[in-house]
Image (cartoon, rainbow, N blue to C red):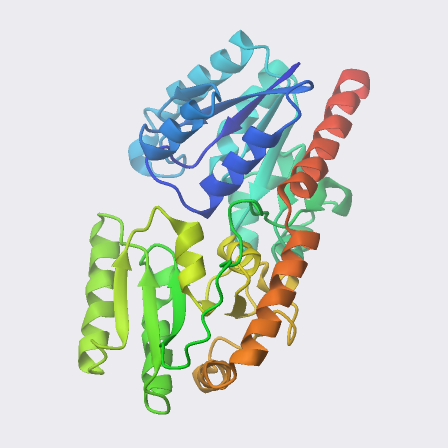
Length: 371
């Protein structure tokens, strides 16, 4: 077996990136590859990996670019290189591109290929700052996230676009359809409560819909991290709900560990920041309204499995929600189309096979002609 080292953004919480990494390392062809995961801290994600019998090592990797890390990052990089050497690692794959600088000492000292996974829309400055030109290969989760790399001079042949995946056996449509028209129509947004997820905009949308329809409820699913910035934003979101007098319309569920069941509770998902939650909702037979950011436009089939609408068009998003709340037959039809599309485009098997194909080419090239 070929040992592959993975770098995770964190071990103490589970976000979209951690979910995708988990799908990958637990579904690799174990006859060919042996995954080893490095987490910078311990906690729920590291424990999940250990429960799946994935070798997991806790190694603090301080943020490379922060001034406070200058005295510790070199030591951490040396430890990572020693770890790779000890386990005869043949390839390193970081699930978070902000960890790119840690890959370079491993690549240069051990002469092995390194892969960076791009899950964000980068700026040209970030492409340069995080050494993407020195990566052996790059995996982007959308064509949109590939564009800044190309514009910064990264060769097209060094980039693969591989969409996020979802466990279709876990995320499934609710087997019992609710035909009770008196039940509220449930619209959800999923993710950490933070500015990037735009929950305040979601509250604005809820305010618009509530003026037209009294039978729609909005769920904010997720919690804020315990940092000053995130606590402050969480407070702003709740204050906005209070200002609009939406306490009976907008509900905060907090963090949920039962996402497959949570998705079944929804009628429609709104995402204002893209991510693997789109695949989870569609696999659960839910239509999705998103904005043209990240992989959203490539995951949602506009008009068939949901809609991709401009972020600044709160009225347009609100109108679509109002239409779906009033047309349960159309909502169900689009939900079934969403599940079918998820089966065709977002399976773990397809996702993992594409990444394994990349591994094979890199390792064969490295063994024959250098990285």
